[in-house]
Image (cartoon, rainbow, N blue to C red; front, side, top):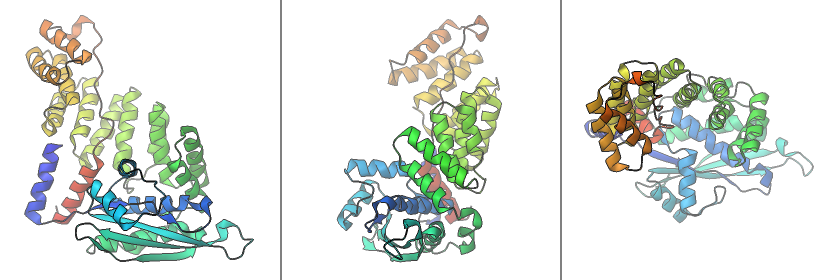
Length: 393
């Protein structure tokens, strides 16, 4: 990670590129219809996805939720400007996007799905502590995703004035999702109950099969539930032009590895490394290669370790690969570094005992399995990607 951040800093210094970090809050429901609170998260989710796809650095829902928890804030509340500033500063962002929406029924007896909506987005520049523009979209609630996509395009024009992405790219038919599918997806996204979450996401995927978002979330859910092969099936539905493609491929690598398909895992992780050359990815490549008895595993574990010389996962895995290749002294040196940090690591101690005893793999003992990294630093790779785009590399 250190090597990556040093590279980013070097590029910034050399090019003068200004890569801003953006926090997008759930939009506040200003109407009396609480059953439409989900719309606020739908707007935020679309903005997050589209701006990330346009090479902006956007905090994900997990980072946002962590910031809200620290300040004891409800995600759907209307915040004062002072609160927004405090939240943004606590998360170390440059810009905050927040807003609200109004719902109006054509008649008192009309159904909510037939209502109209006006969305208003506002921006706060924390670098200069001043307000940005106010952007509005209005239309029928049934056209919600069209309104959200156009709002995302307008937001990009403010955040990145030099971006030259045609509005048609945002309003392509593939991005215009049925209202009932969007509602089901967002309700699943917001649910804290795994069973209810899966129910809503499955319903969204059924209502609009071309909608990649529920497939992405279902894939992660199946991975968490150790349904590895089904996780791969869902995640494979994420198209290559989707901003979540790299992350989906990373999770597919995890699922394939856990299912024992090390060749497939190796392929997925290598694909991710082409776009996101992070230590976490090289660690997992090395793990798959080591299971496949490929000598390249040692080099890839060393490459991972270059990013963080003290990471216990990288030290353990490198030692495991060295031991597998009967390089006992080198393995012992790495394990001693690990145990100096984590003396209670029983697996590392057992491995050190084998290295000291110079036990070869031919002894018949089953070696421990490699330790995987379950996620990678999305903010860091988004920063790197944004810097590279700014610098023209």
